Image (tube, rainbow, N blue to C red):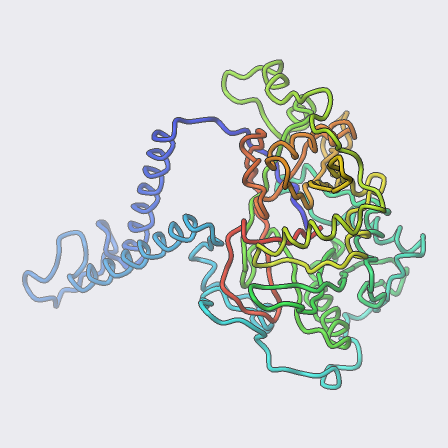
Amino acid sequence: MSDTSKKEEPVPLPEAEGAASENAADTALERKEILEAMMKDGSAAGAGGGGAAADAPGEKLVGSGTAADLQSAVASAKSVIEQRRAMQEAKAKGLPVVNPNELEKAHKFWDTQPVKKMSEEVVDEHGPIDEEKTPDQVRQTPYALPKGFEWVTMDVNDDAQIDEIYKLLTANYVEDDDAMFRFDYSIPFLRWALTPPGYFADWHVGVRQISNGRLRGFISGIPAVVKVYDAANIKMSEINFLCVHQKLRSKRLAPVLIKEVTRRVNLKDQWQAVYTAGVVLPKPVAQCHYWHRSINPKKLVDIGFSRLGPRMTMSRQQKLYKLPAKPHLPGLRQMQPKDVEQVHALLTKHLAQFKLYVQFEPEDVAHWVLPRPNVVDSYVVVARDGTITDFCSYYYLPSSILKHPRHKKLNAMYSYYNVATSVPLEVLMKDCLIMARDNKCDVFNCLDLLDNKKFLEPLKFGIGDGKLQYYLYNWQCPQMKPEEVGIVLL
């Protein structure tokens, strides 16, 4: 799952000034939280402070309740400070930052699943959360649906059925907080995403309304072999495209869809899953940020995706983001089927440095990164002796523009897998941006995972307001920094 968040153009600050501003903001927020905690305990000045007439002389503090009240308030304030410091420490280490309010928040569905609770820390534990089971212990019949709905297995190779999935996602899937943009997955993209080598047709789960036969919900799973820290060859499912029609979300179909696809995965003797979400659920193993690189700044400002910074004109903005007319690297060309073995070897060696990644086979590389028109594009750098030394790729994921009289589609491309061995990654990715521009890209999006931080600021990416949490189902391990994550989910 990707990101539709709007970009905020960064306003550069001198390092010291920026740090001072951030510290001042943190201090002000801390003071505010402490005051709120004290008021909650009835210990702040003003009416309603908790003094009692029977208090001993001298025990009562003027305008602040009793000494006991103040002691309780100080304890609450210390708790706020500790939570605040914990958040700052996690942020400094690059680990997922969770609002303290989320720690005690009840999650009606997820509290019943084999995932870590928000308040649980994982330090050294690695492995499954649930006790080991066999497919014979799995429920053999589908879960019950609300009256008037039925389960269906969607055949994504059938034109009519894949069109149904496309229409459901187009009208009801992820959109930004301001309802200005919504993902527009193409039918070729969906087929590519849902049919990797070894896929299971019955992991494409739909819910139909019996009265009219319309598709009202969908969720998918695909198989993957994943390594997490030192645990290799874990058979997992990648769960994606959870979508329920907007008018039926009160029916609580989403939890039932998750339980049903889990049941079908378990019947194949697979017990772990990896998935992403833009919301915070129990409990992220990593938290990544989206970064955006303007390719067509005029259109992006026009549709409200980005804005002009102070003292910035459109002509200066266009000049700032202008790319060279042609790629720079000699030997750069589009990837071909004959390159699969070398790219597989390059990618396998590169991914081994990360703590979470897919263990690809050559047939997986052929499926996921060989170019497909308007779906995925990849390029290799070939040395004079025929050796492939570098590789870059991106996938196409446009968004519908919901509230604009002229522009209807945002042509967004997303960084996929990139490996540079003969040149700095920044140099390789600059040529990648040029190729994306030539393919009518408006904005090039990127998560701060893998080695991506090496090129984000040098190539004028700006951080967006979107975050993507990574989750593991029925697997516990310590949390990771974004740059320790080596898996890109669509």
